[in-house]
Amino acid sequence: MKILKYIWLKFFNTYGIISNNGSDTVNLPNILEAKKRTNKEIEIKTNEYIINNNLKHLGDNYCYYIKTYGCQMNVHDSENIKAILEDMGFTETDVLEEADLILLNTCSIRENAHNKVFGFLGRIKHLKETKPHIITGLCGCMAQEESVVKEIMERYKWMDLVFGTHNIHRLPNILERAMATRELEIEVFSKEGDIFENIPVKRDSKYKAWVNIMYGCDKFCTYCIVPYTRGKQRSRKPEFILDEVNDLISQGYQEVTLLGQNVNAYGKDLPGNYRMGDLLRDVAETGIRRIRFMTSHPWDFDDEMIDIISKYDNIMPYVHLPLQSGSNRILKLMGRRYTKESYLNLVQKLKKKIPSLALTTDIIVGFPGETDKDFEDTLEVVKKCQYDSAFTFIFSPRVGTPAARMKDDISLEEKNKRLYKLNELVNKYANKNNQKYLDKIVPVLIEGKGEKGNLMGYTDTMKLVNIDGDDSNIGFIVPVKITSIKTWSLDGKIIF
Ligand code: 5AD
Ligand code: SF4
Image (cartoon, rainbow, N blue to C red; front, side, top):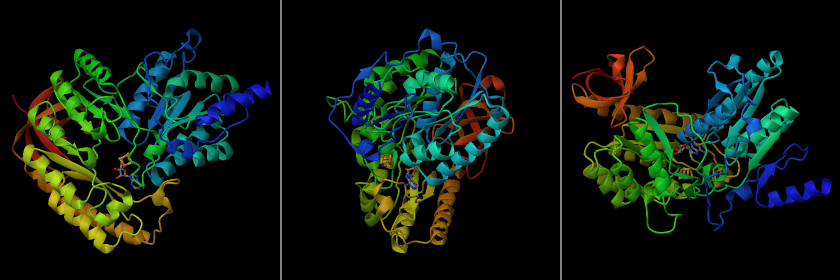
C-alpha cells in the first residue's frame, strides 16, 4: 500500500501536483514547476466537474461564508466556489459568526494582502474555539505559495483545507475528505490544468457579469507572482465565450466584463489568427448592452482592437492600461517590453480614435533601484496621460520573482514620499476629469442601493454615480443628470 502511495505521489509530483490526499505526506507547491511552460496542448473539458450523489447533501443545513481578496479574477472564482458549495447543499451567509464553513479566497500580489489573510485567520481561530465544528479553508493565489502552505502546516494546523487555483473543480472531493477526517487536507496543483467548461457559477449581480476569456499569464513581469500562481496563458475558445454571453443576455444581463490577466494577448495560444479584436467584435455583435474588458497590457494592444472599440457603441469607452513606471530604465528592469514613448503613442492613438475615452492605470513606486529621475519620468507620463484614476502601489518583493532578488536600497520613507506625491498628482487629474461631467446627462447602469441608501451605478466611462431616484430603475441603463462632483464619484438624478 505504502509503495502504491509512493508511486502515486511520485507520478503526480512529476506534473507539479501536491496533495496529501488524506495521507500524512505533503509535497509543497513548487515555484520552479509553476514557472515551466510546456507546449502541451490545452484540452477543453466539458464534464470534468462532477458531483456525486452522495456529496449533494453534504452541506444540507450548513452555512458557508466566503471572503474574497484581490482582483476580479478572484471575485469570479468565488462565484464558482459559491455555486459548487450550493450544489452540495450549503447556503450562503454574510455573517461570519453564523458560518459552519469559512473559506478565504486569497491574493498574493502584495505583502499587505498576505498579512490581512493571516490576521483574519487569527479571528477565525477564536471562533473555532467556541464552535469547534466549523470547517475553515484557504484557497486562491496564496495557496500556490510554498511558504504559505508551510506556515499553515506549522502554525495553523487547526485549519481543515487548502486548495489551489487549479483545483477549484475538485472542491467537492477535497471538502468531503476534510469533513470526514477533520485533518488538514491540502490539494494544490503547481501546474495549471486544462480548461474546465462546466464549472457552475452563482453570480453576485443580476445585471453585470464577469466572463473569463483566458486564464494565466506568460508575460513574467519581473515583480509579478501571477504567472506562477495562475499558470500558463490558456484562452477559452470563442464559441464557449459567445455562448456564455448569449446565455447572459437571455437572463437579462446588461453588461459583461471580459476577464483575463492580459486580455490583449487573447487567442495567441489558440490555433489560427483569432485575436482580441475579433472576440470584441463578435461579443459586440451579440447585442449585449455593455462590454468592458480587463486587464490590458500595452504590448499586445493592436490597432485592430482600437478600431473595433471605436466602431461599436456597446464596447465601453474605458480602458485600464497599466503603466507601472514611466522610466524606460525601470520598465526594462520590470520586463514590461514597452517604452515610455511607445506607451504615450498608444495612449495618443486611443484618445484620438475614442474621443470619450476614460483611461485608468496601475503604477508601482519604489521598484528596486528607482532613482529620483526615474520617478520624475513616471510623474511626467501621468501629467501627459491625465488619467481618470490610478491604482498606485509601493513595490512589494514576492518570493521567487526576479525583482525580489534585485538590490533595493530605497528607504520606506522615500517610497512613501513618492507614493504621496504621485497620489496628489493622480487625484488632481481625477478631479479635473470628473469636473467635465457637471450638468451633463449620461447613461448609467443602476446596479442597486449605495451606502447612503440612494441608488448607485456606473457611467459607460466607469464613473461611480450616487443617484436620487426610484428603486424601479434598478437593473436598467437610464439617463442621469450629474449635479455635483467629488474626486472619486459623481452625484446625479435620473431624468426622463
Ligand atoms: N509589488 C507592487 N505592486 C504590484 N503589482 C503587481 N505585483 C506587484 C508587486 N510585487 C501591481 C501592478 C499590477 C497590479 C494588479 O498590482 O501594478 O498591475
Ligand atoms: Fe503580472 Fe505582468 Fe502578467 Fe500583469 S502582465 S499579470 S503584471 S506578469
